[in-house]
Length: 134
Picture (cartoon, rainbow, N blue to C red):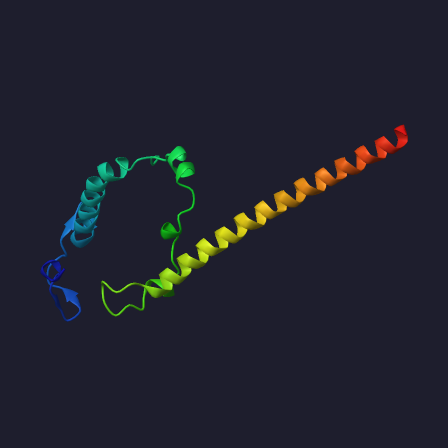
């Protein structure tokens, strides 16, 4: 700090630099300011919660909502006005809905095919049993 700097003439101190308990005054001032800032921040740090609320039932009940899916950065931008619809977001959400429908249909078809195969296997077993009885 300029006001605490000692005067120097011909390479020699005109007066001794200010010291506090053997430390340069500028360093002592910096230490005090640092301690005060840290002392003020301790209650803030202690008040940070260890856990945040998590409602698993609500999460399971809600399922996947295409409107809540995080968008890619390029899908968020590109609009000319605040009220203009974001076409990339609309297309992305529609593709999520279509993919969800496709997966549900594929699961239903697989289940139906499994049930038919099981019924056919049972029918073949019953026919073989009937033939052996004759």
